[in-house]
Length: 245
Image 1 (tube, rainbow, N blue to C red):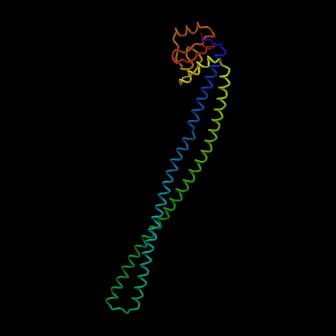
Image 2: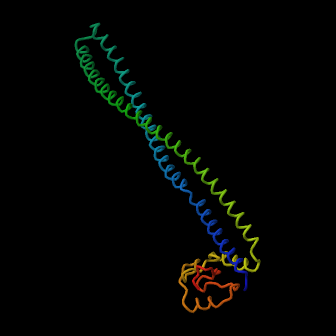
C-alpha cells in the first residue's frame, strides 16, 4: 500500500489521540475518589455497627436500671410496712423478733441492690458517651463521603468533557486520512493493538521492539510513500528524519 508521507504523519497523530482516549477511559474507570469512597464506606459501616452496639447496650442498661429501681421500690415499701408494724408493738414477741430479722435482711438486700444500681448508672454514663461518640463518627464520615462524592462528580465531569473533546479530535483527524490507510490502521486498533508508531533509533514506537538489520534495510530501501509495518506488532511504521535511516 502507498500513502503520502504527510498522510502517514496524520496516522501517527491519530495514534496519539487514540492513546489519549485510552488514558481518559482508564481515568474514568479508576477515579481516585472511588477508592476513597470505598474506604470511607467501610469506615461508615464500622461506626454504624458500633452505634448499634452502643444503642443495644444502652437499652440493656435501661432495662436493668428499671428492674433494680422496681426491686428497691418494692423492698422500701415492705420496709415501711414492717417498720410500722414493729413500731406499733401489737405483735407477739416472737413475731416482733422475726419482723426485726426480716427488716435487717431487707435493709441489707436493699443496700446490695442500691450498690448495683450505682454501678449500672455508671455504666449508663459510659454507654451514653459511646453512643454519642459513635453517632458523631457516623455523621462525620457521612459528611466526608458527601464531600468526596461531590469531588468525584467534578472529576468525572472533566474526564467526560476530555473524552468528548478527544473523540471529536479523532473524528476530525480520521476524516482527513485516506480511507484505505485508515482501514489498515483501524483493523490494527480493533485487534487491541497500537495502530501506528514512529520509527526512531531502530525501535518501533508502538511495541518498543528493536528492529533487526534486515528489516531496517528493507524499510530504508522502501519508497517514501510506501506504507511499512512492524514485523513484530503489525503497527504502521511512520518514518521521519528522526528514524535515522
